[in-house]
Amino acid sequence: MRYLGLALYSEGPTDDRFLGPLLHRLCQQLCHEHATQLIDISNVLSLIDAGPDREKPREERIEHAALSARGAWNILFVHGDGAADPVRAIQNCVAPGLLKVHENPLFQGRAGVAVVPVRETEAWVLADGDALRAVFGTRLTDAELGIPSNPPRVEKLPDPKSVLENAFKATNPSKRRARAGAAALLDALGDRVAIEKLRLVPSFQKLDLELLHALRQIQVCP
Image 1 (tube, rainbow, N blue to C red):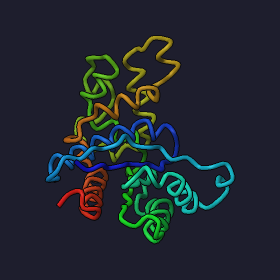
Image 2 (cartoon, one colour):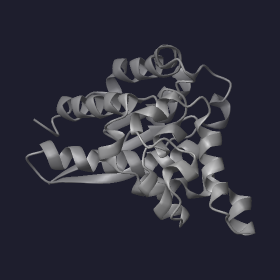
Image 3 (cartoon, rainbow, N blue to C red):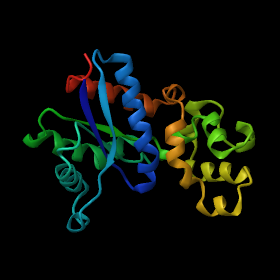
């Protein structure tokens, strides 16, 4: 059996809540599909900036956060929302940090993976209506929730975060749940959203392929 440690540098704690369980499950899926040995996969460690680092360029913050946890991970995910221009997001917010990690000899034998939804992480949340129904506790249809029934169409939504919140409100939640909002359920959604449906979404397909490449790069998968 081989151990595989995972870490995530995201744009914020809300993204961590959904992406952490999702990325763990995706690693499990890829190892099940491709690995020739048993892989013990860690939960995803959320990396945070140290106080003095918060005013530094993002690529330096990514490197420093990765260094502070270097004994805990073999694969580092770096997240950046695409904001309708994922190529620019990769170039400006993700690739410089991954390059820093790649060039640092202390990270030899490890790999970095970009996590870039076309607009916002919430778009991936919306790709699976069945997961939303299970977590929200509703029988409303996709149309009644106001979400696309075709997973690739989530990338066309101009404001996925609002669509998710409106879908949650459509379920008529209790006052307590309404105050917390849909964000309070992102960890449960990360555990539930179907990877098969996400694999129909182009930006997730890119993540899927890059993660498989990383697993091969560190010789977890052949």
